[in-house]
Amino acid sequence: MLAKPHHKKVTIKQVAQAAGVSTQTVSRVLNERPDVAPATRQQILDIIERLDYQPSALARSLIRQRTHTLGVVIAGLRYIGPSRTLNGITTQAEAMSYSLLLKKLPKFETEEIEPILNDLLARQVDGIIWAVPEIGSNHDWLHQQLPRSPVPIIFLTTKPKTNRSTVSVDNYLGGRLATEHLLKEGYQHIGHLAGPLTWWEAGQRQAGWRDALAEAGKLANNNQWAEGDWSSQSAVAPFKQLLKQYPQMDAVFAANDQMALSVLQVAHCCGLRVPQDLAVVGFDDLPESAYFYPPLTSIQQNLQELGSTAVQQIARSIEASRESEDIYQPETIWLKPQIIVRESSSKIQSYKSSTKET
Image (tube, one colour):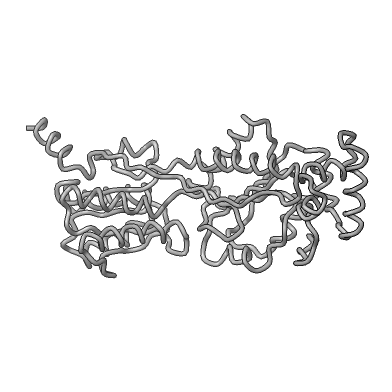
C-alpha cells in the first residue's frame, strides 16, 4: 500500500536549506555519488541524522535507474475521443523511446484506485497518465483518497484540480466558438443537442453555448436543448423532440459530429434545407465531416495532440523529479480548439452553391 504523507515529514529541500546546498547535492550524497567534497558530504549526513530525514526508497531507486516506461490508465476505447487520445499517447511515447504499460478499465467509474497505482508502481513505471474522462463523480477520489505518488501523475480530459497536473481541451471555448459563429452568420434561434451531461466535456460545451447566447442578449431556456449520448442513433429522437419544442429554431450546435450526422439526416427527412432553413455545427471535426452532405462545420479538437502533450509534459516532470524528492510542480495545460467553417452553417457558402446550381 502507498504510504500516505505525514504533514511533519522532513523533505529533501529542508535538508538542503539547512546545509546551505542544492537538493541535487543532497541527492548525490543519498545515492553515494563520488562528486561531493568529503566535508560537504559529512555535513549533509550530520543534518540528515539530526533532522531524522527518511528518504523514499522507491524514489531513490528511480533516481538510480529509470525503466523508461509510462503507465497509462484508460477507459471507453469504443468512443472516438479516448481512442484518438491513446493514439496520440502511443505515437509520442514511441518518438521519445518510452514503453507503455496499459491498464484498461472495464468502466469509467472505479473505486479501486490504490491497487491500480500500486500495480503500476510495482512495475517501476517512471510516470502515470490517467486518461479516463471525468464523468459524474468518477474523479472524486482525487480529493478524498489519492495518496502521494513517488512518480508524476498527469490527468487528461478533466477540470483542473488543486495540486494535480492536467491536460485538457478547452471544451467551453469550443461551445462558445460554435455559437458565436452562428450568431455572426445571422442566426437568431440557436438550439443545442448536448452530449451526456454526466460527462464534464459535454457540460463545458453546453456552458459555452449558454454563455455565448447570454452575452448576445439571448437567454437559453430548457426548451432550446436536448440530450444524446454521443452516438448517432441516440440523437434521432432528442433532435425530433427539439424541433417540436423549439419550432423557431434556425440553427443547432450538436456536441459532436456523430450526433450532427443524425441532425443532417432528420432535417432532410423533415424537408429542412441546410443551412438555409437550419444551420448545423458539430464538434470534433472528424475526417469524415468534410464529406457529410452538406459538408459539416465543426469545432476541431486535436485529441492526437492531447495525448502527445501528456507524454511530453510527464517526460518533463520525470526529468524534474530525478534530482529532488519534491518531484514536480503541478501544471494545468489547456489546448485551444478552432472552428472549421464549411457549408452546413455558412450562408455565404450556401449562396455560392445555390448560384452554381441555377
